Amino acid sequence: MRTILVVVIGAQVAFLAASFLFLSLRRWRDRYERQTLQRERRALTEGIAGALESPPKTERFTKAVATVRFDTLVLVLYDFSGRVGGDAWERLVDTVRSAPGPNRDLRRHVTSRLWWRRLLGARALSIIGGPDDLFLAKALVADSHPAVKLASISIARRIRDGRLLADVLNQAIVSRRVVRGYMFDTLVTARRELAPILERRLTVPKSVFELRDLIRLAGTLATPELLRPVLDLASHEDPEVRGGVARALGSFPHPESRTALLQLIRDEAWQVRTRAATSLGAIRAEEATGLLRGALRDHNWWVRLRAALALRQLGPEGLSELEAGAKDDDRFAREMARYTLGLTEAAVADYLT
Image 1 (tube, rainbow, N blue to C red):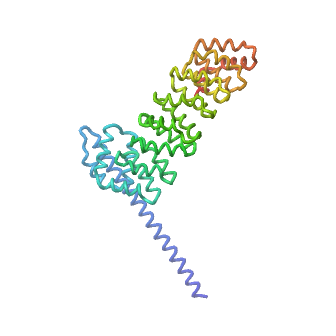
Image 2 (image 1 turned 120 degrees about the horizontal axis):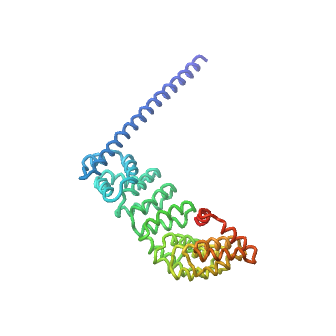
Image 3 (image 1 turned 90 degrees about the vertical axis):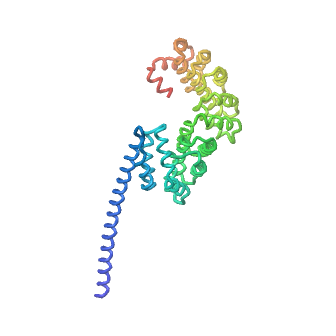
């Protein structure tokens, strides 16, 4: 019995000693990591400051790039990327990419089996990537891990290549709504490169579901070459597609847009009529005054509201129609006209956002 007790006590003492040693080593390692990080960040920050001087002094920055760890380099550059731009930033990028170490580490991270290393590689490409990194960027956009895939979308802001944008667009279409919105926001920054890709996709969509999102993106871009493909869909059999067209045309102040919207405000689907009324007000289509006045009698409340708001956007002529509507024999038209006339400009702006 005494032997067992001695063994138990010895085991407990050994465990406590091992725990104390582990915690001590952990604290020493954490302190060492903090000191190393501070030293590397200071070296990089001072080097960047010198490289941004006029004339630039890149010696310290070049030395720091060659000696610091890759994760520290990405962390510091990511922080500076929001404050430095243009030629000054490109000089920093050229210095980094001319060093063999960062390029080697970048490839290792992008092709790593560990998702957090690929995540760091995606963040690096989003700030220092170039045309030669297209293959790596496409691999990250198609990554199986959602965090890596989401981070890689920002690479499209840096690498303006149609093949990469097409991949991002494909991923956006099949993503959830919140992620899709983020991807679309990123795609819009490459307006010039994206427009021809989107034009082709609108002509031959893979599904109605895809078409709805493509039309929404086309309305956000609102480039001239996208007007015709959007107009061609104004008579689509799916009411959601027609509604998307009606909404998108509000970003195209063109005579053909007005003509199409004057037809869509007569559509059998109330959602389409609602969006058409909103777009007619957005493009200030004064020729639609009569139709909007008639829409105050629509059986759907949303159509009546959007028609009334559109009339307010049309200026004096629209206001006079609203005032006439306030005396209309139709109770619904009369109440909507009075309600809209009583709104402040701020309230109208809230409705239109």
